[in-house]
Image 1 (spheres, rainbow, N blue to C red):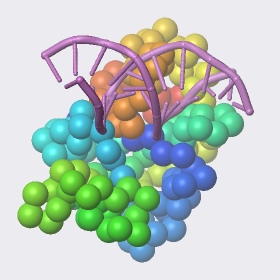
Image 2: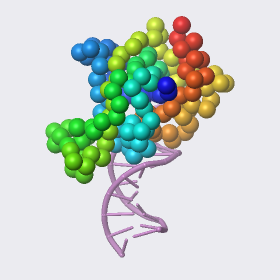
Image 3: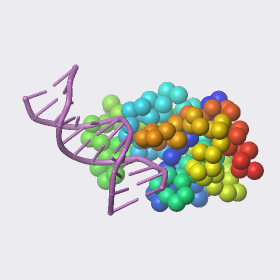
Image 4: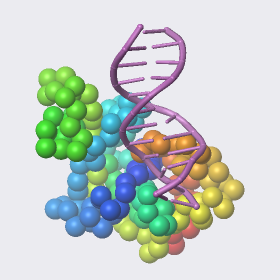
Length: 153
DNA sequence: GCCAACGTTGGC
DNA sequence: GCCAACGTTGGC
């Protein structure tokens, strides 16, 4: 089983939105980056756990935990002309983009802020701290996972 | 709202 | 296949 960090702008989709969905489950659509697409297709598997990271807000940080409940499958919003994520180059027969389904597990009692993550020497390798990192999904090591869950208690 | 970083596009 | 222009991300 692997650990991940999924970014989302809470103004678009927050951890509270996920909690309020039917079955507290939603598809994680809209990824339009090949590196992340490949992870969704090949590496992110049912049963994996992920941090829900709130980005582009004040303050940014990790809000809680969700679980991958469905392996990668074609992102159907790519062939919906009404969608913000419409991509005419993706079709049902040759899908270009993939998504997984995620389920709400818990919201931390408090946000673990980016600032707090920066101050932890053992979290310095996390991709979200690297300047210019724009990947919306990144791997988390077991050690990083344990440290952050510890901070949340 | 600014701007650095960087992925993507498209002309050649 | 190069690379300049452009668009997007995301912290501040």
